[in-house]
Length: 459
Image (cartoon, rainbow, N blue to C red; front, side):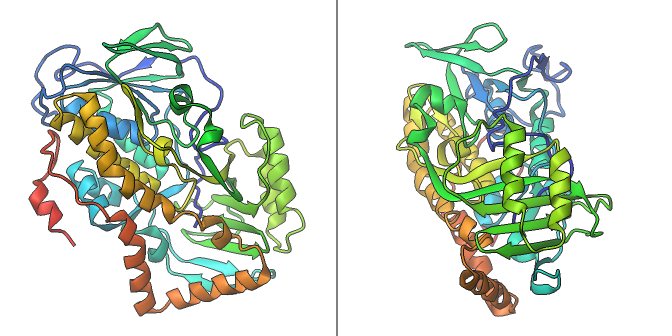
């Protein structure tokens, strides 16, 4: 299901490519253990100097960016993360993790228990009739994986784990990249030019880094004939970690509450459409598009959704699409997460991003920082896995907003069957299959919180 909480930051695409803001350097307070002081801090995570010869620029501070910064900084690399937004983006849609591979990486990062402390604890989600009577109930555990958190909460957690050892620059963006035999010369929209050994593009589905290095997005984006929108609204239904969803042919409206706030809820809209031409920064135009798709729906709560949309300052809007690119690296630049294997929804992309960050860091250590060897090994390890996870997202639009009444009824029958214990178990195994289809190497990275052998024995 599509999920949103009340503190979602205003943006209209999944890569956070809104207007650039003038921002300063935010690195956290230097102190003992800070790489710029050279002093020892005994309570810092274990580090090594395996990549101490590398200066790495990471573009994007959502999930994939802080995740690779987490691992590289613990191997001694000097890491700078540049983010176009003026600050971390809070709230957002909920993301889940499932299966042994996700769990292993999260445990090695030392955040498995933290995620359980901040999980959504979402309850049942109900498909309703036009008169708002219940039609089908879906148990939350079927959609929420092993643990589910808000994207913004995960981003904040990763930032807190890295801010003292990683340089974060908010309100800026890469303007140009020029590669030489010894590094990559970078100019920024605002900051002074700098040179780095490696660049990681972790800036989402609409990656600016990918465009600069690999060419226009149109070459790689595969549109799936659907769009999704999300925004805040008052919790007039009194929902408490539950959701209500209403479908008509080709469009679905949903109101949900994932955080227990008695006053605020999230609204979501999924609809089929030909590919639209619009400026992602033109919020007024996007509101017109979404309102037009809501108007005429028979569900009585649509009127409240349209009213909330008019004043929403947290609107998310994007095509349901995937990124398909032949290779993830070019010279000293490598793509990570959604920038390389993006899927708007349903492709367990957040888990893939964290797994990919672990593998990329591991291959760089194994290759002693030789980017040619490491990037080739990274692609060989992660491509099949990432594409397998991405593949399961292709039916997200038609499943959430079936194009005909007949297909709506068919989808609802599937939901009813999933209410049985036997089929629920089968569905759980099916959704975990792609997420678990990777044998993780034991890279022995500094910063791992537990022995890899013990983790791999987890079911």
